[in-house]
Image (cartoon, rainbow, N blue to C red; front, top):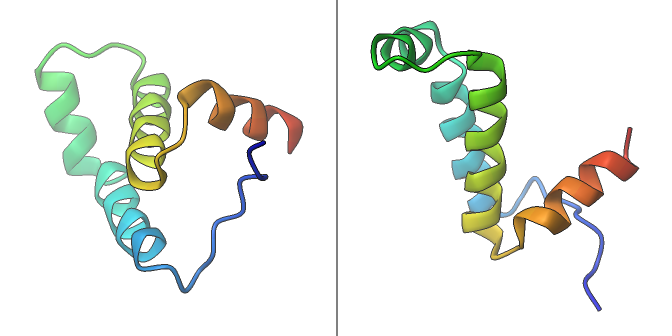
Length: 72
């Protein structure tokens, strides 16, 4: 059984992830993605964030999406 997705602010992975998200959200990142032909940048950024959460915490993408959906 998997536990709920609760990110601890003191977790070093969370701190690093927060810094990565800040870079991903920057205007320069959006310009770079657009220059490579990415369309609908908001959806792309959301997808990248889900993938990074999955990698950092070893969780399935479907589990993360279910957790985000249940927290709406």
